[in-house]
Image (cartoon, rainbow, N blue to C red; front, side):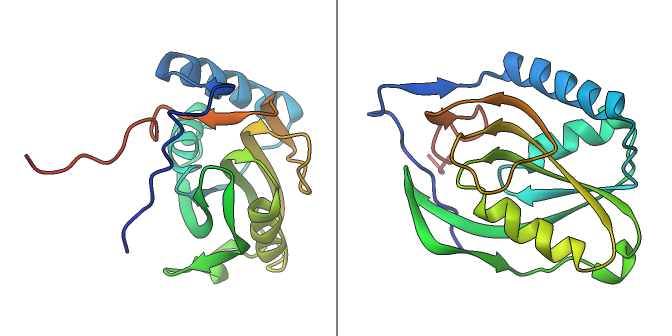
Length: 167
């Protein structure tokens, strides 16, 4: 399966996150989580957008156990599938029963992806909380922790350029 890259070069009003601001954002988000008193035992990133934030937060929060759930929803700038779709491989759900889990994604845009994953994990008897860098005002799933609210297209440093190709 080839991963899609959304070209937002013609989008005028957009939020651009740099690598430097990402470092600041993840530190501030980690502090917010720590200050809340929630101590996750497992961190689960929503792939692909949540993986870099998830990796950073595992170190900032001292969480060793981590995994990812693969969900496809966006197909282009402001274009989605009718519903988010879980993709294989699936999580080892038996190992998360009764755990404190932090679900991490880059953005809660419509919130439908986050809602799907939270519903899935809550069904396994886990205490589940969520953290995102950005929340959009119209989201249906409001994360427990967020860095910033914006109402524009977001360009992340890891997806700002198309995938590299052989010369």
